[in-house]
Amino acid sequence: MFSKRPVLVEIVTAAVLIAVPFVMPHIDAAPNTVNRVLVWGLFGIGFDILFGYTGLLSFGQSAFYGTGGFVAAYLLTGAGFAHVVPALFIGMVAAALVGYLIGLLALRRTGIYFAMITVAIAEIFFFVEFNPLSDWTGGENGLPGVPTPSFDLGFTTLNFTSGWSLYPFLAFCYFVGIVIALRIVRSPVGAILTAIRENPLRAAAVGHNVQAYKLTAFVIAAAYAGFAGGLLGVLQGFMPPDAFMFDTSGQLIMQTAIGGRGTLFGPLVGAGVWLFLQDFLQATLKLGAAWKLVLGLVFVLLVCFLRQGIIGGIKDLFALMSGRVKAASEPVQEAAPVAAAAPVAPMAARHAVPNDYQGPLLQAKGLTKRYGGVLANEGIDFAVHQGELRGIIGPNGAGKTTFFKMLTCEVPPTSGSIIFEGRDITGMSIVDVCQLGLTKSYQVNQLFNKLTVSENLTIAALAQLRGKFKLDMFGRLSKIRGLQEQVEHTLQLVNLTARPDTPVSQLAYGEKRRLEIGLALASSPTLLLLDEPLAGMSPRERVETVRLLKSIAQGRTMIIIDHDMDALFELAERITVLQEGRVLVEGTPDEIKGNALVQEAYLGGMDEAELAV
Image 1 (cartoon, one colour):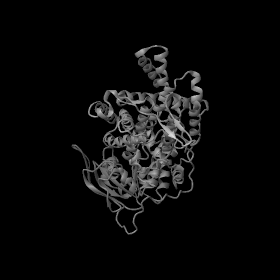
Image 2 (image 1 turned 180 degrees about the horizontal axis):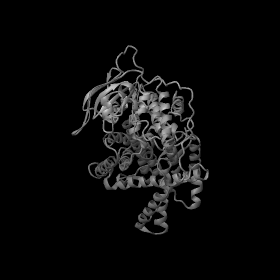
Image 3 (image 1 turned 30 degrees about the vertical axis):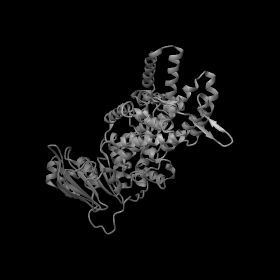
Image 4 (image 1 turned 90 degrees about the horizontal axis):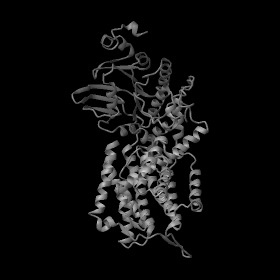
């Protein structure tokens, strides 16, 4: 998914764009409609990076479309600026800056609240354009007189005026835009944006700065919108005020949905369907304003029957015809268990413990967590040393998962402190803690379900190899030193070497649990916390996973929570018992088995002989 056929797509795109002016006149396609499709397609590229790849639905793209368009148009009309292309880039930069400032505000919220903020922003910009800034924007009249580009080559002058004459300039702009976008989505940044769309919680938990990457996508989308807005003024000869209207954002969303989100070309296809149908319904069928009703029905049908849009439907059809799609009723079978292999050498931890440090690797002091009047944990003192494998047991409601979340800074403690490698990490973010080398697997699988096994592990490994945030938007995953080796090594560790290209959705439950552990391992942690790794497994899967945990424990420091006491007694060197959010007792497995308090409170009063069975 991250980098397939990197040159073929660009070659085919260039060939199609070159062929359009020779083919389309034969089907009586209006050149102005073709040009509008290109502008909307370019506009949609940025939106698809934001929505299709990052999963952020913005209804405010008209604000950036209008900002870039009016800045460029004002420079070319009111300010006397004579150079069209530089004006377009200045408008793009202005839109990107506005996008950065708005993103800082809007991205404080997620889901419907984020979407509603963008709606409000679009309405604010529309009001400002019509009133306070009407002297610069022309208000309801817009800005007329926007010139078309021309290039003096010395021996000749290239003039792009209108119709098919303007098409080469717009096609070139679109081609450059799609090439840049393809590089972005194939880059490490693009891989992380896709992971954020699938599971932002897990993307942060493996060490990526999710907010910074979301803001990056927001700014990219604003920049594309700003440049497309400038092209709209060039195409029409004036900058219309409806660029700021909410209808513009709505049309962009519908076009992307029709064509197929997460494809980059979907907005172009959707714009073609939308605009050519609009022309056909209005000009040929003479429907007048009723064209919106018919087009709305077409949109509903396409979305209902082609949930991934036209391009997604074509992909599914091709996959079905080539036999790569399983029948819906075909059960998912787990791959045959991998025979016990030679031990795999552990990966080096990302952050080596200082040689002169003699204290516990992790220490909690007086750790307490309250949720209103509910006390989840109270006054927990806890320490784990380098190389230790510690088990934590306790009944449901004992506060084990909350305790884990505090240790990894997923939730802040109400009071107390957490010391990791001699450093106070209390109050740090889960991203920063993961970057220090402290990470966890989840009780309920938190995977990137639409990605393959190796792509999942790639996301986790990137956090270690690149840090929590890096703008290598034009880099290649294949160029990151050690990435492929780390992914392959993790596949070996969790016995998934036979399933690297399998989508997570097609894995059996036991394989998903192993991948869940693999995501934590792929970031090469100094300390690994596993939250109920045996939960929900069949007896056979439990035996295999215990063997797996023994293998990966070699040379690592681990803390494991689980209800399978037999397995935990077999694995752990020391056991901590929690009761009602407090530490009841700590000791070796044999000491815990023989402890009367533990037998009474947790093991139903079973005697030591029964526990040993």
